[in-house]
Image 1 (cartoon, rainbow, N blue to C red):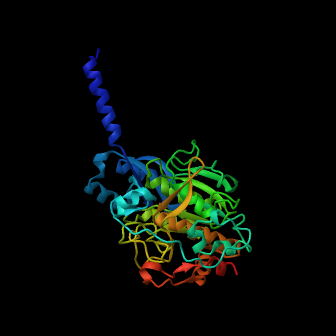
Image 2: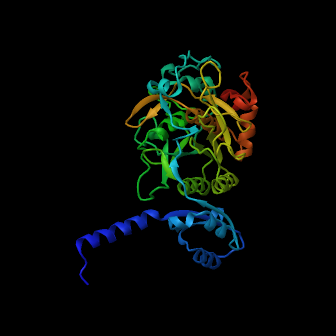
Image 3: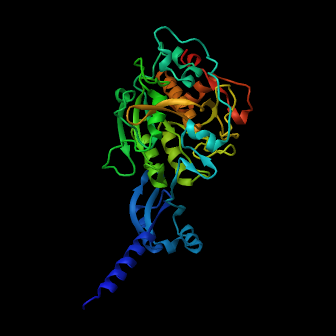
Amino acid sequence: MKISTAMALAVALLTQAAAAQAKQVIVGFRPEVGAMERAESLKRMGLKFVEALPEIGAVVAEAPDFKMAADFEAAVRSEPGVDGFEEDTHRNWLNFEGVSFQGLPLPDFGAVMGALPRFEKAPAASSLPPGVNKEEVPWGIERVNAPNAWAKTKGEGVKVAVIDTGIDFNHPDIKANYAGCYNAIDAKVSCMDDNGHGTHVSGTIAGALDGKGVAGVAPKARLYAIKVLDAEGSGGLVGIIKGIVWAGNNGMQVANMSLGAPIGTIFMRAAVKYATLRGVTIVAAAGNSGGAMGCPACYSDTIAVSASDSKDKIAGFSSRGAEVDFIAPGVDVKSSVPGGKYDTYDGTSMATPHVAGLAALAVARGAKGPSGVRAALKRSAKSIGLKAEEQGAGMIDAAALVK
C-alpha cells in the first residue's frame, strides 16, 4: 500500500505524540511480593517495566499519560502487594516556586531578594592559626572556626558525596580531593558540572588548603560527585533516589544535598532512610522560601541547615521551622566555580556544605554513623541568639568539635 507524504507525516507526528505522552512512575511493593508477582502486577496495571530499585522495594515503570488519571491511581493503589505509587516528577530542584536552592550571585541578589544592606565581615570565632593565609579563608569558613581545627584534622580520607549538578574535577582547588563519581542521569557520561552549583558547594566542603583560591571546612576530605541534576538544575525523582542509594551502597560517610522540593515523597524518604542505615550522614538545605522547610531537609533522618549572615542573623530568604538542626553562613559565600574561577553566592545551598564539611571533621575524629555525627555536632554548637526554629542547636564551632 502506497502512503502519501502527508499521511506519512501525520503518522510520524502521532508516533511522536504517543512517545511524548509516556511517563515514568515508581511503584512500591511489599517485601513478600516476588519478582514474578511484580511483573504480573505491572502487566495488570498496563505498566511497562523500566528498572528495579531493590534497595527501596520499588520498580520504575512506564505508563501512557492517560493512565495518570485519578481513577488509574486508585486502581494501582488497590493492586494486591502494592504499597506506594508516585510519578517520576521532573523538576528544577534548585529553583522553583516557594523554595529556592539555587546559589545566587551577589550582583543579582538585590533584584531577587529586594534591597538588603551589605554585610560586614563575620565576627571571627578566634584568630587564624599561624601559617594560614587569611585571603584563602572565606568568612564562613572562619566563622565556623574551621582553621583552628586543622591542627587536629583536615578531614583526611572521609568520603563526602555531593548530590548535585556534578563537580568541575579539574578546578585547581578541587582536583587534589576529587575521588570519583556517579552520573544518575546517564551513567555513560562524566560528572562534569555544567551548572556551577555543585562546584561551589564542593569548594566550601573541601577546597584545598594550598595558599591560594579558597579553602574548605575539611580541606583534605575526599569528594565524590553524584550528578543528579542537569545544566538547568533539573532532574527526575528517580535520578535523585538512585544518587542517594548509590551513596549508601558505596561507602559514603557524608552526603551534601543542597537541593529540594516544597513537599516530600515517600520514595525519596525511603532512599534517605536506606542510605542513613548504611552509615551516610545526609546534610540538607532548608530552602530559600523564607518560610516552611523544603525536603529532604524536612525528613528527621537528615541534618537540616538554615542560613545566617555575617552579623549572625538569620538570612531573610532562609527557610525555617522545627526541623532546623543547625545554622551556618549562607550569605556572601565565596567558593569555587567551573573553569578554575571563584564567585560569591547566597543561599541555604551555601550554608549546608559548611555543615557537611564539619560532619567530615567529626567523622575523621571518630564519630560513628549518622547518630554519632549528629551528637558530635550538637555538642559543639552554640546559640547565636536566634529562635530554635531559625538556628536549631546553633552555630557549630569546629575547634570544639575536634577536641
